[in-house]
Length: 176
Image (cartoon, rainbow, N blue to C red):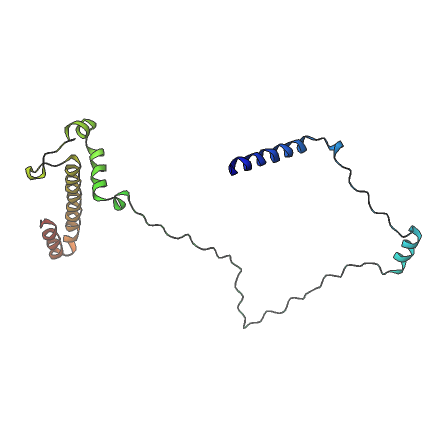
């Protein structure tokens, strides 16, 4: 009930405002006339003749002081604050493990695989894995291979300078 009364009030107010906007300027009330002076023109002329005339003040001339050799003057600069740094988090960094597995499964398996073939998995005691779990294992295997390749490349470069360090790198990456 209160909402209906408020709506009605707003509609009436809007209608009145629209009607006022449509009225021509001729129907608008005339501007008030300027107030007439109580002084006669002769008297106001005599008063203005007696009063001092306005003269704007002369601008102050400031002589530049001789530079003080003990004072160091720096140039004027404007300081603007830097934008706050943002974290460069990848989507994988903020996802849960389950969400990341599902994303990998969507990316690496076909629609037929996801919807029909892998809809139901056997109980975990049989060792069956879902498409998401298999996709995660494949992703981790690929990442491990990339890391191994990078470390072996670095070991090859390091062998020129320090053969013992290169052997230690190869041994460390070959451990399971």
